[in-house]
Length: 472
Ligand code: GAP
Image 1: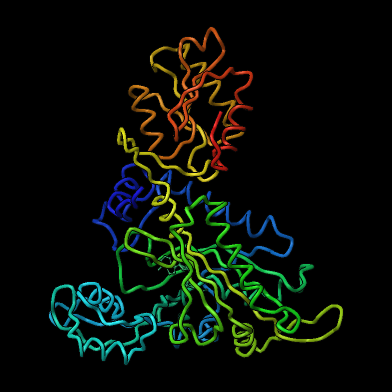
Image 2: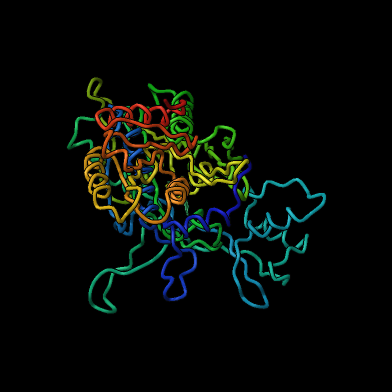
């Protein structure tokens, strides 16, 4: 099964109400997307899966929900104000702006025999040299200016009086909210090292390069963990490996993504942030190549030290047994949920080679709906009434959708495209035999199931589909 093109995914997303271009009635807003009825449900299911896996199912993790706007010193302390930059170049003719490293990557792809170069590792000066030596041009084939740093942080103001407002930032990562609350959590809960704090929330970056759908946007959602430990008693390397295994398992087992579409990429010394001692990206093979889905970094005690220095508050930890006072270190798995969303649509997209049927092979827990209920005909009150009773009965256990439009074949195809694992048809026989036809998304097989056994049958087979086992 080949990877679907980005156009196929964008078209499906818009056609079926997963994702719409934002502000479309005003002609749209570049690089911004709204999640429709199915997309918002899929995003919620992704969030729930992550939260359940990493917070609710573990004794050593707690959750947090901190603010988008924090005290501005947060971002000075973290280093974002000084160095959260991308290299910006400008087309000297039409003044369109680009990320210098992306132009270089594009140029390399066009070469028959490209020079070997690790673009992610190039400094600003090295990028400038490369662009000059190789005459790298803008997409409109014009010369570009030398790269200069461009801050990704969005600035805004709080306060009501014009001219007397405080300048603040929209957070560029959710992680800093965790460091700001480290002491609150130590003081108010019973956590002890090693333990982690996780949170899900929106982050904002004034990205230079747009495109690739929801892969890179100004506003996006992160799910980040800071896992705190005592560097004297816990060796970071095995802990780092354990987190890598956890991340991999979450993507393959919990989300059901094919392992062959994943790879680890270690950051070189030049690419790695200065505060990190080790960084890996877990990349997914999108239609536009292997790209970062999830990062993991050993950030040492850099952030706690910085926030302690700038706030003047003691953010150290006292070991309850030895009374030793020290700064914990952290390992940080940082995931982008919009990229998970795009990955799932891409990975689940299947086309039957025989009849060209499209279906989304999402795990039932992730699919927007578990079940669809259809009355065979919408103008037969007895059928509709019976179907409504079944619909309401199932709604207390499952996410169920109702469809009475068009013929049954079309309704099946619609549900296949949005990933609904099972569709139930209530027909004239149902009124006599108290049974319904249950049709499966993956196999298209149909089975007659008695209403007295319906929930058991569905639960068993949803579980089997969830685990990728063949159904009854
Ligand atoms: N606290 C560390 C941190 O923020 P990052 O690699 O910059 O690390 C983590 O971001 C994840 O957030 C990335 O792996 C990616 O999935 C997601 N992400 C980053 N920028 C994004 C953007 N502009 N649009 C969508 N997702 C983004």
